[in-house]
Length: 252
Image (cartoon, rainbow, N blue to C red):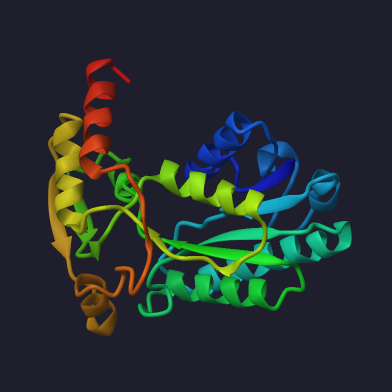
C-alpha cells in the first residue's frame, strides 16, 4: 500500500513514515524538501500519483487565528483538490482534542481544517489527539534562561503512539470521526516542562503563564482533556523522560 504523508518531515510525520515502512507499506513524503509546496499545491499531484491514501500531519507554529486559519485552509484545500483529481480513496487527518472547546487562535485553524475534510468529497478519517510529550520542546529550543509556559491541564500522548494510530486508520479505511486518543496520565504542562529540563540536566527558569479570559480558564480547567470514550495509548511520560535522560547521558 502506498501512503502519502503530508508533513512527513515533522515530529509526527517522521514517526508515521517509519511506522509505514515497518509495516511493509510504501510512504511518500509530501514536503518542500521533497518537491511539494502544500501551501500552493506545487508538485502535489505528481507526488500523489499511485497513492492509496494520504495521512495529513501538517502543522504551523502559531497561536494567532489568521495565520492558522490561512495555513490550514490552503494546505487542506490543496490536498483535497489533488486527492479528488488523483482518485485517492482515503484522507486521514490529525486534529486536537478540545479544539472545538478552546478559542485559541491555532484551534480555529484546526476547526476549519476538520470542516473542509468533512465536506471535501474524499472519504475521510479525523483523529483527535491530546498534546504530545514533546509539546514544550519548541519553547525550550533557544538560549533564553527563562521559559514562559502556559498553564494547561492535559493528558499527553507520545507522538509515536499517535503515528501508530494514524497508520492503523489509513490501513483500515475511512471511519469519519475516530475515537479520540490520549496518554495514560493527566499532567500540568508547566510541571512537564520542568521535568523535561531536569531529565536533560538543563537549568532554566520556567514561568507559568495563565492566558487571559475564557481561553486561559478552559486550558487550565480541563478543556483539552478527552470527553466520553477514548483510546488510551500505552507509552507514559515517565518513559519519555527516561529516554531523554539516556540521550543526555549518551551525549545526544
